[in-house]
Each structure stands twice: as structure tokens, then as C-alpha cells.
Length: 197
Image (tube, rainbow, N blue to C red; front, side, top):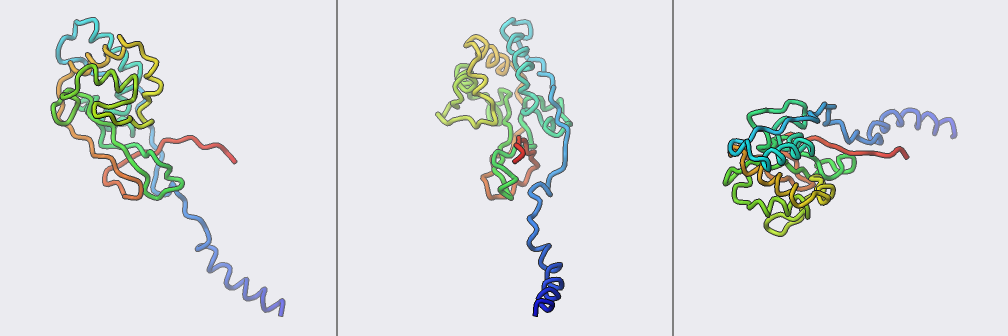
């Protein structure tokens, strides 16, 4: 009888092992090199204003264009869409645990009245930077590092807002956020840190 069990097990095991294997949660991902340094575009107006210049310097230093520029997250920034939002999103839930993670798309930061922040006041922009609260009272997601920006001096936050309001309005519309469990129709990247067990 033990020999029969061994033969049965040796015959069945190869057939069931593939079914027992866990699927690779990153099988749908490929490595990319993002563009970590993307220059902040020149303002369309008030370029000589020292506050606008300071804001541009701070936006460059904080790396805002590395996410808010189309293509930058996958290493191919489109200069014509600098700070005008991205069609490439960022997974905000763990694709190692969830087949379809929640995805956000960095929005348009130009003063376009519909696609961008044209309806925002400079004070509202500064509030988002320093407090993580948008103009409607909603909390910014942690993928936008407002927790670090909370340390900005009020004058610096206002300089950033003043610079952004002096950019050329760009009509580019970033895709809307995708909730966890739904497949995203636009591409996205997964950024995360994992500790070895």
C-alpha cells in the first residue's frame, strides 16, 4: 500500500504543483527608470518677479515636475506638458497584495481654469502644501508628500503658489483616480519599499 501511495503522489504532484504556486504579483510590471530631475518650466508671466523666481527654484528643489509632468514617472518627460499632470499614475495600494491597486494620477498644476488649478487662490495652494487640505476640505493623499512640505515657511509656500499661478495654462487633463479592485485604463507605476522577512 505505501508503494501505491507513493506512485499516486508522484503521478498527481506534478499536475497540482502549478495550481499551488502563488502568482507573481508583479508579473504585469516591468522595471522603469523614472526622471528624478525634471526642470520646472519658465513662467509665462512675471518672470523677473523675485517671488516667482523663488517659487520656481522651490518647485525645482522639491521635484514637483518629477510626478506632475507627463511621462516623467517612466523616464520620458514631455516638456510641453511640464507640471500639466500625468497620464502615468502611481499605485497607492499594494500591488503585492491586490491585483488591481488604487491608482492616482498627478494632476495639472498649471492655472488652466478647468484642467488645472486656475480656480484655486494662492492661499488655497499654500494651504494644500503646508496642511495637506485641498480647497474643498479633503485630505491630500500621502503620495503627495505634504507631510514634508508642512515644514515650508509660509512665504515659501506662497512663492510656490505665485509661481504656479504664473505658468502658461495647459489644457492637459490627467485621468481620474481609480479605486482599488478596478483595473486602470491608463498606465501606472508602483513605488514601494519592502523589508526582507
